[in-house]
Amino acid sequence: MGTRAEIEKLTAKFAKAVTNKDFATLGSFYDERARFLPPGAPMVEGRAAIQAAQQKMIEGGVQALDLQAVDVIEAGDFVIEIGRTTVTIQPSGAKSLILLLVGKRRLTKQGKSVVVWRRQKDGALKIVVDTFNSDHGGHI
Image (cartoon, rainbow, N blue to C red; front, side):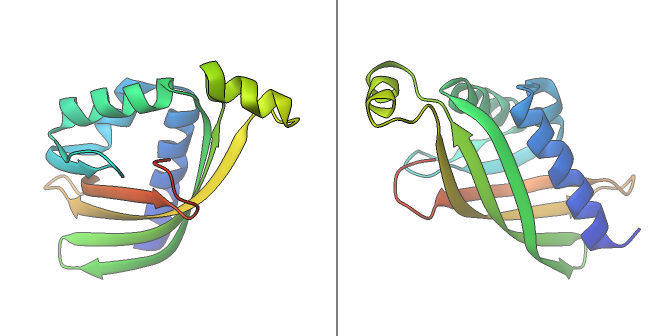
């Protein structure tokens, strides 16, 4: 399997873990010393901390995630993935009420991402740096 196909398979599994709220699987994508750079928030370091940060974010209303690899660049043991994101959000509280008033139940936001993967000694790829942001402002 080529590297691009490998990344596409991994990103599909990652998106499925987000959609299914499978936080243990989500955490397993990250290297122990990975860094997560979420928009509008401090850097998060380490697999366990990243898993906890993502769980909080996803439980805040994320319903589905779709990822598309636009570019896959190989550089030694590293693979840099530049992608597009589509996230479906169902906010809670007042934001949910506002959506209902304008005839919507969910928000869909497009964005972009850069993910740096590192090839491990066993040949597997793990995320070492992960960042994304919205094309439309806001944090998701």
